[in-house]
Length: 226
Image 1 (cartoon, one colour):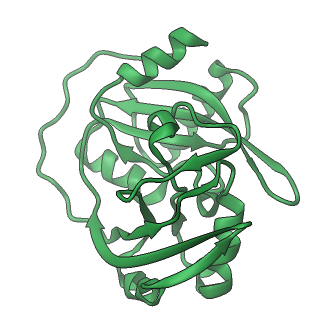
Image 2 (spheres, helix red, strand yellow):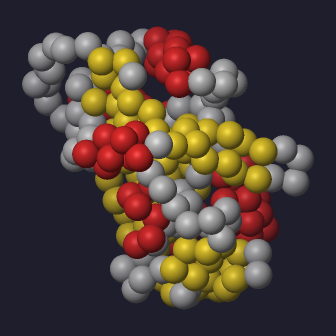
Image 3 (tube, one colour):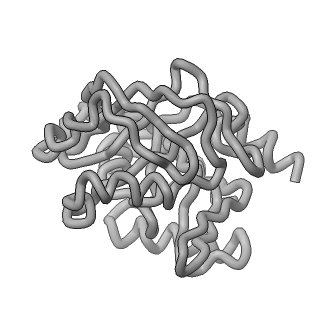
């Protein structure tokens, strides 16, 4: 754990040039480890995704995913409210509208996408990422030190961080080993920067993508159960 008490600055919200393109999803279930298959399906339709700086592909999560701190071993069951998002610089957002009413093969599963909408990034002092992958992750102290170094390179001074359970993303060539991460007491500008740039590697596989978070309770529960 990395925790330092301090007061947060109340500066004005900053507009972002990065957005989430969000789709409704029609699919009953999907493999828990579907990130690489999802990337390959999208790459086939949108070869441009590998050329767009800071583009990130959100993984799909269902009710059984435990807010990301825990997830099923084999399959995730999805509800009608499930959404899929691509985080992209806004100037490329219209590129993905052609995914509307398309059905893609995600491994052995079929997923239909519809009704794309633009979601602006939310500026909040607490961010959560389901899987952060960095080079040094053999233990919690090493992992948080590497995260802190990455943030320092972005001119961000971290006050409070907490990591949770380990997740593994499989690709044909290697395994990406990451951990859940919560960062809180962030300045507004820093919160925006982390969401725009992400942390670590594997953003096309759902890693390093930060979302607004209201409470550290799920983290504490997960840590207590380890």
